[in-house]
Image 1 (spheres, helix red, strand yellow):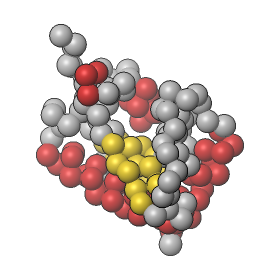
Image 2: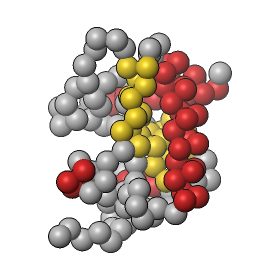
Image 3: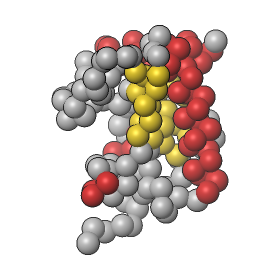
Amino acid sequence: MADTAYDPDNIFGKILRGEIPAHKVYEDEHTLAFMDVMPQGEGHTLVIPKAPSRGLLDAEPETLAAVMRTAQVVGRAVKTAFGAEGLTLFQFNEPAGGQTVFHLHVHLIPRHEGVPLRRHEGGMADPTVLADHAGRIRAALEG
């Protein structure tokens, strides 16, 4: 059985501590949203809590509420920024559930009819493109 303790040295913990850069789009007291470096579609954004939480099942209810509030705010901006017709939200838990980074996170992916998602393991995106996408989302947040 997998170790289910939270490991603060996961990549998202390092992003929260500023040890690894990220293309940030939104931040408040409880959450951070930034671009996924292996996007499944243009505008693929992640929302994470600042509280140490491995996944859905160990997170405090207040942490989950904060993540979902941010997912709603950022999700609207992502949809607007990319002229999307819809939005896909993913949240995975534990290896058998598809989780690969063991810090609670929600994927927000703007969707267009008939456009399939890319594979998540499809490689790292161009940082210039990610910066542009982050700027578009920040602009949509500013309204």
